[in-house]
Image (cartoon, rainbow, N blue to C red):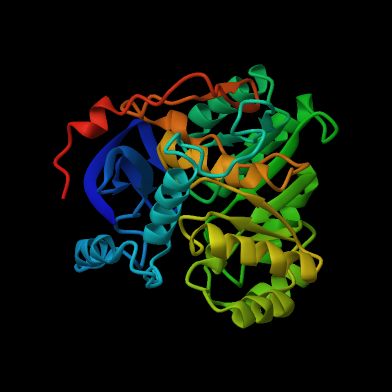
Length: 350
């Protein structure tokens, strides 16, 4: 008979994380343990990365839903329609099923046999700070850099891109942008036209989600390929997914399993994208290394040929010591190195 327990944990950023929507010093998350009562030493681990203040799931009854899910574990009932909870429980149950070795998806990458190329993420900051961060990523050997834009003066952002392109053309550095919905339907195409001078690979979510007609127009007229990110959140029905992609016709979708329905629904999104001739890649969403590891294992099963967005685990001072390591732009897993769950085992488990 299965039992599940959970505990809250606060991750601390090394530096203030800034997007066009928020400034963050900490990131609350939850960890879960699932085990058979007959073998309590064999534990399946999962992470439930709730976005406080930014996610629709951040409701007063969230922990009540978490308790109810734990109580029903093993009953055969479906998981609740909370992406973060589905993400964590799918992790834990897969881990337990695969021998409680933190093998969430049994792939060559999970066994330490392959590496995955990732993009270098540049968080928002003032012009000088962002320029310094860009230089660090380039010096580390990244060939694909993703910049979050929309948080500082637009002309300053153009200057940053101009500096990069003076030294590195598109054959040497691929530039991806993430606007996090910072543009408006009225100014988006004008700004995209200015950005296109810098050979941009793609831009994520130029306007806020939920504006299908405006997004469809932007996707069809933009000189830069459009990628949908927040637009995917809250879409759980398979037919609805197809309808949205067929209407907007983006070039790419960005998959964050903790925000777009968990791993099973992320698989559905990939199916929809392929059937509609749309590209995709996966991105972590501020998980600790435990959640990052699960996403990397999952996406590695697809053998992606383009850089993935899987480097956020290094943002924290109190991350969970793990087998996940970054060498330049290549994310790897040292299968011989075990997780250190000392910090987590000392928590108050519910």
